[in-house]
Amino acid sequence: MYRSNNCGELRISNVGESVTLAGWVQRTREHGGLIFVDLRDRYGITQLVFDEEENATLCQEAKHLGREYVVQVEGAVRERYSKNPNMPTGDIEINVSTLRVLNAAATPPFTIEDYTDGGDDLRMKYRYLDLRRTPVRANLELRHKFCLAVRHFLDSKGFLEIETPVLVGSTPEGARDFIVPSRMNPGQFYALPQSPQTLKQLLMVAGMDRYFQIVKCFRDEDLRADRQPEFTQIDCEMSFVEQDDIICTFEEMTKHLFKEVRGVDLGEQPFLRLSWHEAMRRFGSDKPDMRFGMEFVELMDVLKGKSDFSVFNDAAYIGGICAEGCAVYTRKQIDELTNFVKSQQVGAKGMVYARVEEDGNVKSSVDKFYSQEVLQELKTAMQAKPGDLILILSGDDAMKTRKQLCELRLLMGERLGLRDKNKFALLWVVDFPMFEWSEEEGRLMAMHHPFTAPKPCDVPKLDTDPANVLADAYDMVCNGVEVGGGSIRIHDAVLQAKIFEVLGFTPEKAQEQFGFLMNAFKFGAPPHGGLAYGLDRFVSLFAGLDSIRDCIAFPKNNSGRDVMLDAPSVVDQKQLDELMLDLRKTEE
Image (cartoon, rainbow, N blue to C red; front, side, top):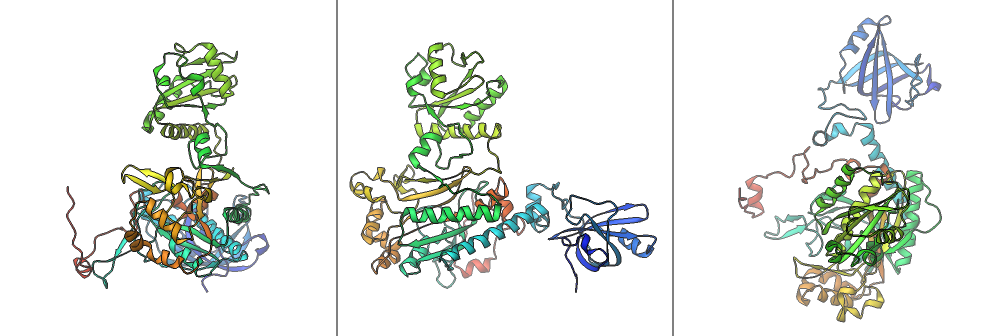
């Protein structure tokens, strides 16, 4: 056998035992007639000792060991003279009697250490080396435990794990599809699923009652820190349920995951629920970070028309936030905030600030326009105290200005240390608009997807006022990140046809795209609904990461490229000919 023990399990109780270890050389160092080698595997690090007085030949061999050499050693466990309390194996070492080099290694392009000298691109190119680093490996171990806990919980609630196809048909709405040409059906294409949405609905029609799947999904969209072209969902669906049934089930699962995997008790109280409109009004976001306050205060009544300051007088929205204890901000810091607002290029005309002095007076950047009496009204409206800084944005478009104020709020929360990664604030955002207007398409689009059910009380509005119909939809938000979302689904073919009509589908087009689902509804579809968690996002929150990439074994970069495999790449002309594909030259 290659090893009797791994490199993370030996303790003081093993002193005197003869053991065989195998792993990678982390580092070597010489001290007098001794050579010390740290041997690493997935489980930890054990110190090896080569003694020149005991075996000069063996000691000479050890001198030639380089970083990342794969070796096997035999020796006796002994107590360390100089213990390392920061290592689980820090009380012992192996007095080596036999050394065997299993594989020599080239010098790695970056150090395989917790704090490496490798940049992101280099680490992604040599991801198999990066995965040897403890922090990255720990993220994958956390992901493994998370998935196990999900499976155990859902199994205990009667859910069946059922696989769905990876090659499906392309559907409109949502993000762009990745398409796959079919050699056996020339000129036709599969699509990689953006989610198993229609398939899990068909499983409910099939009587499976409760389904889940930890599944790969694919969307050809612009990337950011919490997006990848391929990502993993915990996809779930339930029959004979209403919104409260789903929220209660998955709130319980979330609390279970936090306790079992993260060691955090979220308590017995149900999560906060905010309507979409309330979340947008108070925080300018449908995924508000509730770890801190700094809620928006609307200031139209306080500031508009109270002077000849046209920026406020012509505004459709004026809103502010109060940053506690920030009145000491320097002019340079204020300018940084102003430039940050300008860089957003969303809709605000600029930023106005006001300081509350220790004597209670208010000093602002618009003192020449507003009396102290009006500024005191501002202080009262903002509930500001001496030492606080009030930041105000205004604009012609209320929604855009709120979004800009949201970014300013998050920046201030970050600067004030209020976005602690070890603190968790969860809530549900409910009652989303059913539709949103697309300037590009010139029509209403589904805010979630076209199978989302409207609130029952709003069904009559589909004929008279579709833009103000609310959806029976819900998102779970954690620390300002949407970690999951779902809805009650339409299970009635007539209502589904009506939704397609509002979305601009002709009956023929709806039948062509979704006939399989609408036909299935004719055979007795149960009321059903569900949600999908973003597994990568959830695990990254548990791990305290800023990006989901470090909890994915082999991620893509910000351009959607796998720099390790050099994909996407060109293919042989023979393959293109088999698929009957011709490529156009791109314009230079």
